[in-house]
Amino acid sequence: MEFSQTLIPAVLLKRYKRFLADVRLEDGTEMTVHVPNTGSLLGCADAGLRVWLSDSGNLERKYRYTWEQVSVGPARVGINTHRANALVGEAIDGGLLDLLAGYTERRAEVRYGEENSRIDWLLTHPERPRCYVEVKNVTAAVEAGIALFPDAVSTRGTKHLREMMRRVAEGERAVLVFCVQRDDVHEVRPADNIDPEYGRVLREALQAGVEAVACGATLTDRKILLTCRIPIICPAR
Image (cartoon, rainbow, N blue to C red; front, side, top):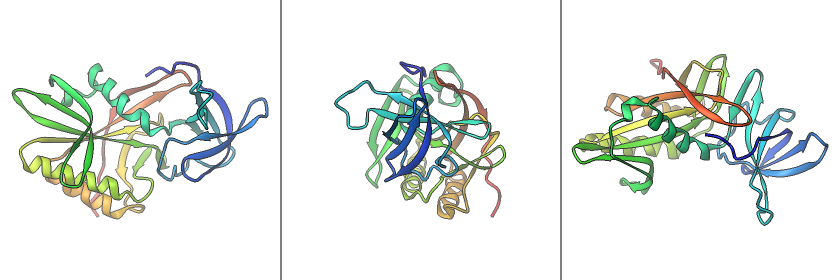
């Protein structure tokens, strides 16, 4: 995924009201930008961190600029959750996610299930069971090399796991994809200390036949690319 323009460097002053942050540009200008992430941004929203912004170019938009990336220690992290679905779509097309290859149609944001959900990608083929693909953007890593999901209690994420288990019980496929927008991790784990219920239901879903895969990314101020598969580790509790 290439940005239409090179991202703009800045320094984070504070993040607040979930969807807003104040930043300072290199010329000293301070402004408020949009934060496209509903999570806590654990470890990624400390004042003083170097961040990068995209410019919508829309003078009519209340918050013209969007926070896209942040530098945390040696790592560059993509915090824009809206990028994750497209990144996974590109990874499917590029062959990184071979377990999702071979379908003839891919549709985004399809309503389904008993709990009024939307699946990120629905893959179909005339001669294969439908495949429901749920994408989760991962930004937190509180231990060296280990990414964690979620970074806050996620009742929505747990609901999605329940829906996916129902699809598998009906004879269809369900695949959970962790889109790790960090370039410094080698595995993903459930954040049991943050959301123990999500961790419990994730383990139940895997036992029930829900498939899971994680992809790591390379990030620059020009593009983001999912480049590798990384293992998902669910230690016994």
